[in-house]
Length: 97
Image (cartoon, rainbow, N blue to C red; front, side, top):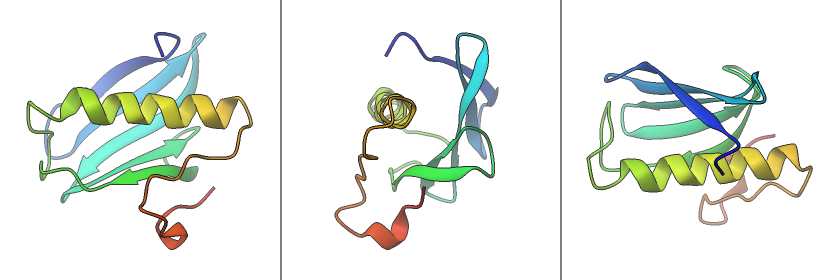
């Protein structure tokens, strides 16, 4: 997962990041109104991961590392053309490719 570099573009309300691999943007991460999502390859692309952390506009300190790691995993899965790992508790209507 060290292949993906996250660059924070906004620290709070919403907390968001652009993800890069080999200098190319491969993801957009955003936490707003209690919903965390990852779009591939950029904002407005297909949403490949969704979650509902405790944080409203920014992560709680005990959850940031976990959700950013899950986001990187989803991006790497998408890049490697594996079936997207949906972590939306089996509710496929909450995820899109």
